[in-house]
View 1 (cartoon, rainbow, N blue to C red):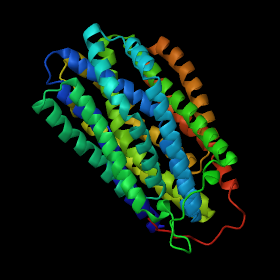
View 2 (view 1 turned 45 degrees about the vertical axis):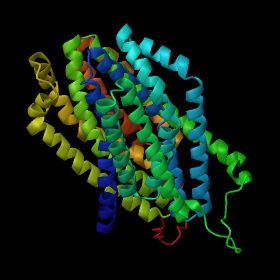
View 3 (view 1 turned 60 degrees about the vertical axis):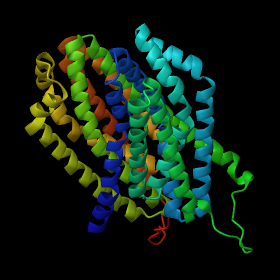
View 4 (view 1 turned 30 degrees about the vertical axis):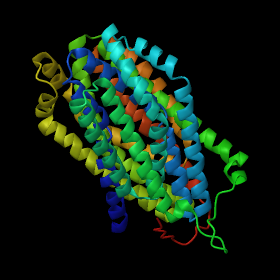
Length: 454
Protein backbone atom coordinates (compact mmCIF):
# COMPACT_ATOMS: atom_id res chain seq x y z
CA UNK A 1 0.00 0.00 0.00
CA UNK A 2 2.92 2.34 0.72
CA UNK A 3 3.84 2.43 -2.96
CA UNK A 4 0.44 3.96 -3.81
CA UNK A 5 0.89 6.73 -1.25
CA UNK A 6 4.28 7.42 -2.80
CA UNK A 7 2.84 7.51 -6.32
CA UNK A 8 0.05 9.87 -5.22
CA UNK A 9 2.47 12.32 -3.60
CA UNK A 10 4.98 12.13 -6.46
CA UNK A 11 2.20 13.18 -8.81
CA UNK A 12 0.36 15.58 -6.51
CA UNK A 13 3.28 17.75 -5.35
CA UNK A 14 4.38 18.91 -8.84
CA UNK A 15 0.71 19.37 -9.77
CA UNK A 16 0.10 21.57 -6.72
CA UNK A 17 3.11 23.69 -7.70
CA UNK A 18 1.86 23.78 -11.28
CA UNK A 19 -1.57 24.94 -10.09
CA UNK A 20 0.06 27.69 -8.05
CA UNK A 21 1.92 29.01 -11.10
CA UNK A 22 -1.25 29.48 -13.18
CA UNK A 23 -2.54 32.65 -11.40
CA UNK A 24 0.89 34.23 -11.89
CA UNK A 25 0.02 35.26 -15.46
CA UNK A 26 -2.76 37.57 -14.28
CA UNK A 27 -0.75 38.58 -11.19
CA UNK A 28 2.19 39.79 -13.32
CA UNK A 29 -0.22 41.68 -15.57
CA UNK A 30 -1.83 43.33 -12.54
CA UNK A 31 1.46 44.33 -10.94
CA UNK A 32 2.82 45.88 -14.13
CA UNK A 33 -0.41 47.70 -14.96
CA UNK A 34 -0.46 49.04 -11.40
CA UNK A 35 2.74 50.92 -12.17
CA UNK A 36 1.41 52.56 -15.33
CA UNK A 37 0.11 56.16 -15.20
CA UNK A 38 -3.50 56.45 -14.06
CA UNK A 39 -5.87 53.92 -12.51
CA UNK A 40 -7.59 53.21 -15.83
CA UNK A 41 -4.72 50.97 -17.00
CA UNK A 42 -4.95 48.81 -13.89
CA UNK A 43 -8.73 48.67 -14.16
CA UNK A 44 -8.57 47.79 -17.85
CA UNK A 45 -6.14 44.93 -17.32
CA UNK A 46 -8.20 43.68 -14.36
CA UNK A 47 -11.38 43.66 -16.47
CA UNK A 48 -9.49 41.93 -19.30
CA UNK A 49 -8.18 39.35 -16.87
CA UNK A 50 -11.70 38.58 -15.64
CA UNK A 51 -12.82 38.18 -19.26
CA UNK A 52 -10.09 35.68 -20.16
CA UNK A 53 -10.32 33.77 -16.88
CA UNK A 54 -14.04 33.30 -17.50
CA UNK A 55 -13.65 32.32 -21.16
CA UNK A 56 -10.74 29.94 -20.68
CA UNK A 57 -12.22 28.37 -17.53
CA UNK A 58 -15.37 27.65 -19.53
CA UNK A 59 -13.31 25.51 -21.92
CA UNK A 60 -11.43 23.72 -19.15
CA UNK A 61 -13.23 20.56 -20.24
CA UNK A 62 -10.48 20.20 -22.88
CA UNK A 63 -8.00 19.47 -20.10
CA UNK A 64 -10.32 17.22 -18.10
CA UNK A 65 -11.56 15.04 -20.95
CA UNK A 66 -8.04 14.66 -22.35
CA UNK A 67 -6.70 13.57 -18.96
CA UNK A 68 -9.34 10.88 -18.53
CA UNK A 69 -9.16 9.47 -22.05
CA UNK A 70 -5.37 9.53 -22.26
CA UNK A 71 -5.02 7.99 -18.78
CA UNK A 72 -7.26 5.10 -19.75
CA UNK A 73 -5.35 4.50 -22.99
CA UNK A 74 -2.10 4.74 -21.01
CA UNK A 75 -3.32 2.11 -18.53
CA UNK A 76 -4.48 -0.15 -21.36
CA UNK A 77 -1.09 0.27 -23.12
CA UNK A 78 -2.97 1.32 -26.24
CA UNK A 79 -0.56 3.68 -28.04
CA UNK A 80 -2.84 4.25 -31.01
CA UNK A 81 -5.85 5.19 -28.88
CA UNK A 82 -3.66 7.51 -26.82
CA UNK A 83 -2.44 9.32 -29.94
CA UNK A 84 -5.94 9.55 -31.39
CA UNK A 85 -7.39 11.00 -28.19
CA UNK A 86 -4.63 13.60 -28.11
CA UNK A 87 -5.01 14.51 -31.78
CA UNK A 88 -8.81 14.82 -31.58
CA UNK A 89 -8.53 17.05 -28.51
CA UNK A 90 -6.01 19.27 -30.30
CA UNK A 91 -8.41 19.59 -33.24
CA UNK A 92 -11.21 20.54 -30.84
CA UNK A 93 -8.98 23.17 -29.20
CA UNK A 94 -8.03 24.59 -32.61
CA UNK A 95 -11.68 24.73 -33.71
CA UNK A 96 -12.81 26.48 -30.51
CA UNK A 97 -9.85 28.86 -30.70
CA UNK A 98 -10.74 29.73 -34.30
CA UNK A 99 -14.37 30.32 -33.28
CA UNK A 100 -13.29 32.69 -30.51
CA UNK A 101 -11.17 34.64 -32.99
CA UNK A 102 -14.08 34.80 -35.43
CA UNK A 103 -16.48 36.29 -32.85
CA UNK A 104 -13.92 38.32 -30.92
CA UNK A 105 -15.39 41.73 -31.76
CA UNK A 106 -18.90 41.32 -30.33
CA UNK A 107 -17.69 38.92 -27.63
CA UNK A 108 -15.22 41.45 -26.20
CA UNK A 109 -17.55 44.43 -26.59
CA UNK A 110 -20.53 42.77 -24.89
CA UNK A 111 -18.40 41.31 -22.09
CA UNK A 112 -16.78 44.64 -21.22
CA UNK A 113 -20.19 46.31 -21.24
CA UNK A 114 -21.63 43.65 -18.93
CA UNK A 115 -18.72 44.11 -16.52
CA UNK A 116 -19.75 47.76 -16.14
CA UNK A 117 -16.41 49.40 -16.86
CA UNK A 118 -16.18 53.19 -17.23
CA UNK A 119 -15.10 54.78 -20.54
CA UNK A 120 -11.34 54.92 -19.83
CA UNK A 121 -11.21 51.50 -18.19
CA UNK A 122 -13.28 50.06 -21.06
CA UNK A 123 -10.86 51.51 -23.60
CA UNK A 124 -7.86 49.93 -21.88
CA UNK A 125 -9.72 46.65 -21.40
CA UNK A 126 -10.59 46.54 -25.11
CA UNK A 127 -6.96 47.22 -26.07
CA UNK A 128 -5.81 44.41 -23.79
CA UNK A 129 -8.45 41.92 -24.96
CA UNK A 130 -8.03 42.64 -28.68
CA UNK A 131 -4.38 41.60 -28.46
CA UNK A 132 -4.54 38.75 -25.97
CA UNK A 133 -7.52 37.09 -27.71
CA UNK A 134 -5.07 35.94 -30.40
CA UNK A 135 -3.55 33.61 -27.81
CA UNK A 136 -6.84 31.66 -27.55
CA UNK A 137 -5.78 28.77 -29.86
CA UNK A 138 -2.49 28.41 -27.96
CA UNK A 139 -4.06 28.67 -24.50
CA UNK A 140 -6.68 26.03 -25.33
CA UNK A 141 -4.10 23.75 -26.97
CA UNK A 142 -2.04 24.09 -23.78
CA UNK A 143 -5.01 22.67 -21.87
CA UNK A 144 -4.87 19.61 -24.13
CA UNK A 145 -1.11 19.23 -23.71
CA UNK A 146 -1.46 19.56 -19.94
CA UNK A 147 -4.23 16.96 -19.96
CA UNK A 148 -2.13 14.51 -21.97
CA UNK A 149 0.82 14.98 -19.60
CA UNK A 150 -1.37 14.36 -16.57
CA UNK A 151 -2.92 11.32 -18.24
CA UNK A 152 0.56 9.89 -18.79
CA UNK A 153 1.57 10.80 -15.20
CA UNK A 154 4.24 13.28 -16.28
CA UNK A 155 3.55 15.86 -13.60
CA UNK A 156 7.07 17.28 -13.49
CA UNK A 157 6.99 18.01 -17.21
CA UNK A 158 3.65 19.79 -16.76
CA UNK A 159 5.22 21.89 -14.01
CA UNK A 160 8.20 22.73 -16.23
CA UNK A 161 5.92 23.98 -19.03
CA UNK A 162 3.83 26.09 -16.64
CA UNK A 163 7.00 27.58 -15.15
CA UNK A 164 8.39 28.33 -18.62
CA UNK A 165 5.18 30.15 -19.59
CA UNK A 166 5.48 32.40 -16.56
CA UNK A 167 9.19 33.09 -17.08
CA UNK A 168 8.56 34.12 -20.69
CA UNK A 169 5.64 36.30 -19.60
CA UNK A 170 7.68 38.15 -16.98
CA UNK A 171 10.75 38.65 -19.19
CA UNK A 172 8.86 39.84 -22.27
CA UNK A 173 6.54 42.08 -20.22
CA UNK A 174 9.48 43.78 -18.50
CA UNK A 175 11.04 44.59 -21.87
CA UNK A 176 7.84 45.73 -23.60
CA UNK A 177 6.42 47.72 -20.70
CA UNK A 178 9.43 49.12 -18.85
CA UNK A 179 11.88 49.59 -21.74
CA UNK A 180 9.73 50.01 -24.83
CA UNK A 181 6.80 51.71 -23.00
CA UNK A 182 4.07 49.78 -24.80
CA UNK A 183 1.78 50.10 -21.79
CA UNK A 184 -1.32 47.91 -21.72
CA UNK A 185 -0.57 46.63 -25.23
CA UNK A 186 2.82 45.40 -24.01
CA UNK A 187 1.24 43.52 -21.09
CA UNK A 188 -1.22 41.77 -23.39
CA UNK A 189 1.46 40.99 -25.99
CA UNK A 190 3.71 39.42 -23.35
CA UNK A 191 0.93 37.16 -22.09
CA UNK A 192 0.06 36.14 -25.65
CA UNK A 193 3.69 35.34 -26.46
CA UNK A 194 4.01 33.32 -23.24
CA UNK A 195 1.04 31.15 -24.25
CA UNK A 196 2.58 30.44 -27.65
CA UNK A 197 5.97 29.73 -26.05
CA UNK A 198 4.25 27.15 -23.83
CA UNK A 199 2.56 25.64 -26.87
CA UNK A 200 5.86 25.32 -28.77
CA UNK A 201 7.53 23.74 -25.76
CA UNK A 202 4.63 21.33 -25.29
CA UNK A 203 4.61 20.31 -28.95
CA UNK A 204 8.39 19.82 -28.89
CA UNK A 205 8.03 17.49 -25.90
CA UNK A 206 5.19 15.69 -27.70
CA UNK A 207 7.35 15.08 -30.77
CA UNK A 208 9.97 13.47 -28.53
CA UNK A 209 7.38 11.25 -26.85
CA UNK A 210 7.28 7.69 -28.14
CA UNK A 211 3.72 7.27 -26.89
CA UNK A 212 2.42 10.26 -28.89
CA UNK A 213 4.74 10.54 -31.89
CA UNK A 214 4.11 6.96 -33.05
CA UNK A 215 6.45 4.16 -33.94
CA UNK A 216 8.02 3.04 -37.21
CA UNK A 217 6.66 0.76 -39.88
CA UNK A 218 8.61 -2.22 -41.23
CA UNK A 219 10.26 -0.01 -43.88
CA UNK A 220 11.40 2.57 -41.30
CA UNK A 221 8.76 5.23 -42.10
CA UNK A 222 6.88 7.04 -39.39
CA UNK A 223 3.62 5.31 -38.48
CA UNK A 224 1.17 8.19 -38.94
CA UNK A 225 -2.43 8.49 -37.83
CA UNK A 226 -4.87 7.92 -40.67
CA UNK A 227 -7.54 10.51 -41.31
CA UNK A 228 -10.29 7.87 -41.21
CA UNK A 229 -9.14 6.83 -37.72
CA UNK A 230 -9.05 10.42 -36.55
CA UNK A 231 -12.54 11.16 -37.89
CA UNK A 232 -14.05 7.90 -36.58
CA UNK A 233 -17.72 8.80 -36.02
CA UNK A 234 -18.48 6.97 -32.75
CA UNK A 235 -15.23 8.23 -31.19
CA UNK A 236 -16.00 11.83 -32.17
CA UNK A 237 -19.54 11.54 -30.83
CA UNK A 238 -18.19 10.14 -27.56
CA UNK A 239 -15.70 13.02 -27.29
CA UNK A 240 -18.42 15.55 -28.06
CA UNK A 241 -20.76 14.08 -25.42
CA UNK A 242 -17.93 13.98 -22.87
CA UNK A 243 -16.98 17.61 -23.50
CA UNK A 244 -20.62 18.74 -23.56
CA UNK A 245 -21.32 17.20 -20.16
CA UNK A 246 -18.11 18.62 -18.68
CA UNK A 247 -18.98 22.06 -20.09
CA UNK A 248 -22.43 21.98 -18.46
CA UNK A 249 -20.80 20.87 -15.21
CA UNK A 250 -18.33 23.79 -15.38
CA UNK A 251 -21.05 26.32 -16.19
CA UNK A 252 -23.02 25.18 -13.14
CA UNK A 253 -19.91 25.61 -10.99
CA UNK A 254 -19.21 29.08 -12.44
CA UNK A 255 -22.86 30.05 -11.82
CA UNK A 256 -22.56 29.02 -8.16
CA UNK A 257 -19.52 31.25 -7.61
CA UNK A 258 -21.11 34.10 -9.58
CA UNK A 259 -24.28 33.91 -7.45
CA UNK A 260 -22.18 33.95 -4.27
CA UNK A 261 -20.27 37.05 -5.43
CA UNK A 262 -23.44 38.82 -6.60
CA UNK A 263 -25.25 38.10 -3.34
CA UNK A 264 -22.34 39.31 -1.26
CA UNK A 265 -22.22 42.54 -3.26
CA UNK A 266 -25.76 43.36 -2.14
CA UNK A 267 -24.46 43.55 1.45
CA UNK A 268 -22.20 46.49 0.56
CA UNK A 269 -18.65 47.13 -0.66
CA UNK A 270 -17.00 46.15 2.63
CA UNK A 271 -18.84 42.82 2.71
CA UNK A 272 -18.00 42.17 -0.92
CA UNK A 273 -14.31 42.83 -0.19
CA UNK A 274 -14.36 40.63 2.93
CA UNK A 275 -15.91 37.75 1.04
CA UNK A 276 -13.31 38.22 -1.71
CA UNK A 277 -10.50 37.91 0.88
CA UNK A 278 -12.01 34.67 2.22
CA UNK A 279 -12.51 33.32 -1.31
CA UNK A 280 -8.81 33.93 -1.92
CA UNK A 281 -8.07 31.68 1.06
CA UNK A 282 -10.46 29.14 -0.45
CA UNK A 283 -8.53 29.39 -3.74
CA UNK A 284 -5.24 28.67 -1.98
CA UNK A 285 -6.72 25.54 -0.42
CA UNK A 286 -8.23 24.60 -3.78
CA UNK A 287 -4.80 24.57 -5.45
CA UNK A 288 -3.62 21.95 -2.96
CA UNK A 289 -6.81 19.88 -3.18
CA UNK A 290 -6.81 20.14 -6.98
CA UNK A 291 -3.29 18.70 -7.04
CA UNK A 292 -4.51 15.52 -5.35
CA UNK A 293 -7.64 15.45 -7.53
CA UNK A 294 -5.47 15.72 -10.66
CA UNK A 295 -3.22 12.92 -9.43
CA UNK A 296 -6.33 10.83 -8.77
CA UNK A 297 -7.57 11.48 -12.33
CA UNK A 298 -4.38 10.06 -13.81
CA UNK A 299 -4.12 7.02 -11.53
CA UNK A 300 -7.82 6.15 -11.67
CA UNK A 301 -7.80 6.51 -15.46
CA UNK A 302 -4.84 4.16 -15.75
CA UNK A 303 -6.49 1.60 -13.46
CA UNK A 304 -9.76 1.79 -15.42
CA UNK A 305 -7.91 1.45 -18.73
CA UNK A 306 -5.99 -1.58 -17.46
CA UNK A 307 -9.14 -3.07 -15.89
CA UNK A 308 -7.31 -3.43 -12.57
CA UNK A 309 -9.98 -3.28 -9.87
CA UNK A 310 -7.46 -3.80 -7.05
CA UNK A 311 -5.32 -0.93 -8.37
CA UNK A 312 -8.43 1.26 -8.56
CA UNK A 313 -9.30 0.53 -4.94
CA UNK A 314 -5.73 1.16 -3.84
CA UNK A 315 -5.68 4.53 -5.64
CA UNK A 316 -8.95 5.55 -4.00
CA UNK A 317 -7.70 4.63 -0.56
CA UNK A 318 -4.28 6.27 -0.86
CA UNK A 319 -5.37 9.45 -2.63
CA UNK A 320 -8.38 10.02 -0.38
CA UNK A 321 -6.39 9.57 2.83
CA UNK A 322 -3.62 11.85 1.53
CA UNK A 323 -6.03 14.54 0.38
CA UNK A 324 -8.00 14.31 3.62
CA UNK A 325 -4.86 14.80 5.72
CA UNK A 326 -3.79 17.84 3.65
CA UNK A 327 -7.30 19.31 3.88
CA UNK A 328 -7.22 18.88 7.66
CA UNK A 329 -3.86 20.67 7.79
CA UNK A 330 -5.27 23.51 5.69
CA UNK A 331 -8.19 23.89 8.11
CA UNK A 332 -5.76 23.85 11.05
CA UNK A 333 -3.62 26.50 9.36
CA UNK A 334 -6.62 28.78 8.89
CA UNK A 335 -7.61 28.20 12.54
CA UNK A 336 -4.17 29.15 13.86
CA UNK A 337 -3.04 31.76 11.31
CA UNK A 338 -6.33 32.92 9.82
CA UNK A 339 -6.22 36.43 11.28
CA UNK A 340 -2.67 36.98 10.08
CA UNK A 341 -3.52 35.68 6.59
CA UNK A 342 -6.50 38.04 6.36
CA UNK A 343 -4.14 40.87 7.30
CA UNK A 344 -1.87 40.00 4.39
CA UNK A 345 -4.74 40.52 1.93
CA UNK A 346 -6.00 43.85 3.27
CA UNK A 347 -5.07 46.60 5.71
CA UNK A 348 -8.57 48.14 5.63
CA UNK A 349 -9.90 47.71 9.16
CA UNK A 350 -13.64 47.39 8.31
CA UNK A 351 -12.86 44.71 5.73
CA UNK A 352 -10.53 42.86 8.10
CA UNK A 353 -13.12 42.84 10.88
CA UNK A 354 -15.78 41.43 8.57
CA UNK A 355 -13.42 38.80 7.12
CA UNK A 356 -12.40 37.65 10.62
CA UNK A 357 -16.08 37.50 11.67
CA UNK A 358 -16.80 35.01 8.87
CA UNK A 359 -13.44 33.21 9.09
CA UNK A 360 -14.93 30.12 10.86
CA UNK A 361 -16.71 29.21 7.62
CA UNK A 362 -13.36 29.22 5.84
CA UNK A 363 -11.75 27.14 8.60
CA UNK A 364 -14.31 24.42 7.96
CA UNK A 365 -14.21 24.72 4.17
CA UNK A 366 -11.10 22.63 3.21
CA UNK A 367 -12.12 19.64 5.34
CA UNK A 368 -15.60 19.63 3.80
CA UNK A 369 -14.76 20.63 0.21
CA UNK A 370 -12.03 17.98 -0.15
CA UNK A 371 -14.54 15.18 -0.76
CA UNK A 372 -16.10 16.93 -3.74
CA UNK A 373 -12.67 17.69 -5.20
CA UNK A 374 -11.52 14.12 -4.70
CA UNK A 375 -14.63 12.58 -6.23
CA UNK A 376 -14.32 14.97 -9.19
CA UNK A 377 -10.89 13.49 -9.84
CA UNK A 378 -12.21 9.93 -9.61
CA UNK A 379 -15.07 10.53 -12.03
CA UNK A 380 -12.93 12.52 -14.49
CA UNK A 381 -10.36 9.70 -14.54
CA UNK A 382 -13.16 7.22 -15.20
CA UNK A 383 -14.61 9.62 -17.85
CA UNK A 384 -18.02 9.52 -16.16
CA UNK A 385 -18.93 13.00 -17.38
CA UNK A 386 -22.68 12.48 -17.26
CA UNK A 387 -22.47 11.69 -13.55
CA UNK A 388 -20.34 14.82 -13.04
CA UNK A 389 -22.86 16.94 -14.95
CA UNK A 390 -25.91 15.62 -13.13
CA UNK A 391 -24.23 15.86 -9.74
CA UNK A 392 -23.16 19.48 -10.28
CA UNK A 393 -26.56 20.55 -11.61
CA UNK A 394 -28.36 18.99 -8.63
CA UNK A 395 -25.83 20.55 -6.24
CA UNK A 396 -26.24 23.97 -7.84
CA UNK A 397 -30.03 23.86 -7.69
CA UNK A 398 -29.87 22.82 -4.03
CA UNK A 399 -27.32 25.55 -3.29
CA UNK A 400 -29.45 28.17 -5.03
CA UNK A 401 -32.48 27.35 -2.94
CA UNK A 402 -30.46 27.34 0.27
CA UNK A 403 -28.67 30.58 -0.61
CA UNK A 404 -31.92 32.45 -1.26
CA UNK A 405 -33.55 31.19 1.94
CA UNK A 406 -30.60 31.35 4.32
CA UNK A 407 -29.36 34.73 3.15
CA UNK A 408 -32.84 36.14 3.70
CA UNK A 409 -32.88 34.83 7.28
CA UNK A 410 -29.22 35.11 8.32
CA UNK A 411 -27.56 37.53 5.91
CA UNK A 412 -23.95 36.85 4.94
CA UNK A 413 -23.66 33.98 7.42
CA UNK A 414 -26.55 32.28 5.64
CA UNK A 415 -24.78 32.81 2.31
CA UNK A 416 -21.63 31.15 3.62
CA UNK A 417 -23.66 28.31 5.12
CA UNK A 418 -25.30 27.71 1.74
CA UNK A 419 -21.88 27.74 0.05
CA UNK A 420 -20.59 25.16 2.54
CA UNK A 421 -23.69 23.04 1.88
CA UNK A 422 -22.92 23.30 -1.84
CA UNK A 423 -19.60 21.60 -1.17
CA UNK A 424 -21.37 18.92 0.87
CA UNK A 425 -23.86 18.33 -1.94
CA UNK A 426 -21.04 17.97 -4.49
CA UNK A 427 -19.46 15.21 -2.45
CA UNK A 428 -22.71 13.49 -1.47
CA UNK A 429 -24.25 13.36 -4.95
CA UNK A 430 -21.07 11.94 -6.48
CA UNK A 431 -20.51 9.56 -3.56
CA UNK A 432 -23.88 7.95 -4.19
CA UNK A 433 -22.79 7.22 -7.78
CA UNK A 434 -19.35 5.84 -6.87
CA UNK A 435 -20.36 2.12 -6.81
CA UNK A 436 -21.24 2.41 -10.51
CA UNK A 437 -17.55 2.78 -11.38
CA UNK A 438 -16.66 -0.50 -9.70
CA UNK A 439 -19.49 -2.26 -11.52
CA UNK A 440 -17.99 -1.12 -14.82
CA UNK A 441 -14.87 -3.23 -14.30
CA UNK A 442 -14.66 -6.61 -16.00
CA UNK A 443 -15.22 -9.58 -13.70
CA UNK A 444 -11.85 -11.06 -14.60
CA UNK A 445 -9.24 -8.30 -14.18
CA UNK A 446 -6.08 -8.41 -16.22
CA UNK A 447 -2.62 -8.78 -14.69
CA UNK A 448 -1.01 -5.67 -13.22
CA UNK A 449 0.49 -3.30 -15.78
CA UNK A 450 3.52 -1.13 -15.15
CA UNK A 451 3.84 1.05 -18.25
CA UNK A 452 6.30 3.84 -17.67
CA UNK A 453 6.69 4.88 -21.30
CA UNK A 454 7.15 8.49 -22.36
